[in-house]
Each structure stands twice: as structure tokens, then as C-alpha cells.
Image (cartoon, rainbow, N blue to C red; front, side, top):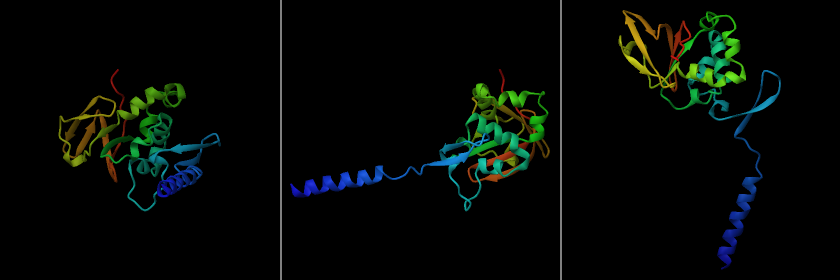
Length: 186
């Protein structure tokens, strides 16, 4: 009986100690307005030693700041750091600038979060699709639930009319830099 009481007291003590520890699963980040907000999920983990994941590749590119802002506004950061594999067709800042005036600013509004998320998901495929392995006429399933068609002519590769300009390997997939923002049907 004494052993049971001792075990019960030990478990209760460990539970109490664990519950009183500070929460380290949330990382504080500063928002654009200067407020400090918790970032929850894998995207809040800092790891400078490992190969960069898809999100870190985008964050490190001066040519993808608009894409990063869109991913953050859509709340999809954690999706891009998951184990994958994931293929992302990443439009450049110039691709976003080619959209009609005011389009990006409108999409970044909180009330358009669902529409923006659908557009961002239309740029991501579950799977690892290396450019040299893509075939003309191939259809890729996108995270939005749609398919995009690959056009290959020699070394030139386009996906849904967006030309692949370059490719960066990531720890959880591949990032294809594209020259156009791909808009999902409907």
C-alpha cells in the first residue's frame, strides 16, 4: 500500500512540475504592426544547421517577398515546412507585379484569406516533381484540388502557362521559380 501511495505522490509531483513549466512550444514573432504574436507550429522552429525547407527557401529569396507575404497572409507557413515531399511553383515578385493593379493588395486583406489560400495551394503539388523528369502533357495534382498541365519543349518547361525559370532543392521537396501567378479555374 505504501508503494502505491508513493507512486501516486511521485506521479502527482511530476505532473505538477510539468504543468508549471513555461510553454516553449510557441515562439514569439513581431508582426508588421509591431505587436508580438505567437507563432505556433513547425514554421516557428529555428534550425540553421539543416538543409532549408520550402518555406526557408522562399524566405531567403529577395525575388519572392510577395509570395512570402501571401503565404503568411493565407496562414500556410506550416504547410510549407511539413515533411513533404512537396513541389512548389513559386512566382517571382515580377509575376505578382504583372497582375492587374490592386490585385495583390486586395488578396492580402484578411477578408480574402480563403481566396488567397486557394491561389497559393494552386501553386503546390504533393510529391517531388523534378523539372528534368516532367513530361509534355503530364498533369499534376495541386493542393487546391485542381490539375495543371505541363508543356515541355526541349529545355523549356511551363506549368499552367507559367515558365519555370529555375529550380531550388529543398529538404522537403523542390521549388520551381516561375514567371507567372497561376490562377485556379473558377
